[in-house]
Length: 271
Image (tube, rainbow, N blue to C red; front, side, top):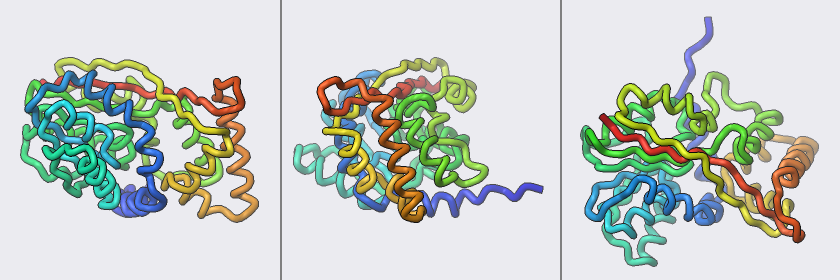
């Protein structure tokens, strides 16, 4: 008999991974995705908006710029602090920063007009539980808007490349499945009046593949932890694999690095 998946233990390890490094260094480069998602969700001034697994607050700040009343949540306090710093610098005061788990949101049913997540809740280990929570806290007729990396896109391939050297926990769905249309339909269609999905690209821009690897290896928690789990030979092999992947996706022709990374933009209208 297969032992049940220990989601609590997996989540503890994930939390430690995201708390390592400094994701905000990379997260701030993704700001345009938060802006685009808020436009797709058609946010209106005064709406109650929840950002789930908000990281350093890209969607949070984008919603606040649209005069929404925003609650920004993450289970890593250091990331919430980065979001709080950014909000203060921009004088965006209608934001409540709260530590919270995407699988157990501390809010009443139907508390929000819109629920957002950019490359965040897709990493929680129990997708059905996350979907249930997003639906629960969104009011009937409200919207759930998500941006999720696709399996075949660059970041999806990064995780696949890492997984060949450092296998992921058994029994856990790959986070990039959240970037598959069928997976989203399976999670949400019974509770949705409409689901609109668009494939989009975010362009990573770095000086070179070596530069991007240096930044991600130093600041992106999951990659930092993957390298830490390997011996010297394994680290060299993983680095070579990742540089080769970056160069394969590179579209720049001037000696720099430009990598289009596919993601799925999803707007779900709740019944």
